[in-house]
Structure formats: C-alpha cells, structure tokens
Length: 160
Image (cartoon, helix red, strand yellow):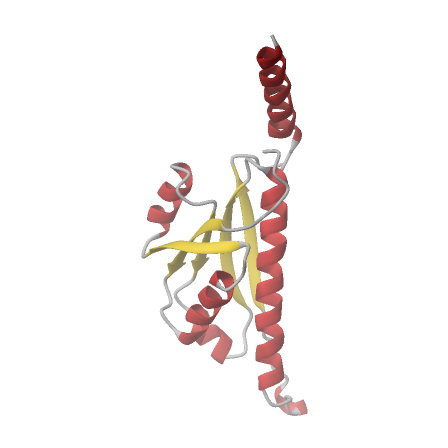
C-alpha cells in the first residue's frame, strides 16, 4: 500500500470478440510497463474469480462486437475492472488504460478518410469504462493509514 509505482500489474484479458481490434488493444496493454497480461479468459466470470482471488489486479473485458462496431464507425465500449484496494494504483492504472484507448482511437480516426458531408458518421472512439472493485470510492486512507501504522508498529517493536 505504500509503493507509489504502478508497474507490472498482473492483468487479465477477456476477449469475447476475437477480432483484429481486440488483439490490437490487448497487445497495446501488454506492451506497456504498467501492465503484464498474465491471464487470458473466455468468460467474464473467470476474470472476476481471478480478481477475487487476487491473481490479477486488472481485468479488461472486450465485448463480442468490438471489431464490428469499430468497422461501422461506432463508439466501442470496453469494460475494465481494477482492484481498488490500493487506490493510488487503481487511479493511475485507469488513467494509463484511458491513454491506451485514446491513442488507439486517434490512430483509427487518422486512418479513415474524412466523412462526406451527406453521410456524417459518428467519431470512432474506444469508450473505456473502468470500475474499481473492493474500494469503490477509491479512499486511499483505508489502506494507506493502516500500512503506515503497521510500519511504525513494526519499527517500534524491533527497537526494543
């Protein structure tokens, strides 16, 4: 709880799409220093169980129609579940994932021809929805203060 760095978070990917866009998002997440994709699941329930057992800290759920929605020029939604016990890490991890989704969205927009005025298509975007589990308000004091107290008590007991 006292470590401010967010690196190598064990991450699970639930790819319900199997398309090129889903693979691209998974590769971008795994290609960062912040996340290590350690598990791939085929069901949401498996990822949820891994989060509950603390086998992973982040689960990215890619919906079954992601590639089709992107090809149709629609906003595609990706769900993310983050272990919120360490609030600071959860907030930073969510921001990193939003940056990854935003970068991919910008790349998609740049690769498309500009829309014709008569057929104004919506702006393509990856709409990432992050939910913090086990600490929904992301109150760092619940865990940070108890961590500091533990360190103080440990140091005090070693001195005697």
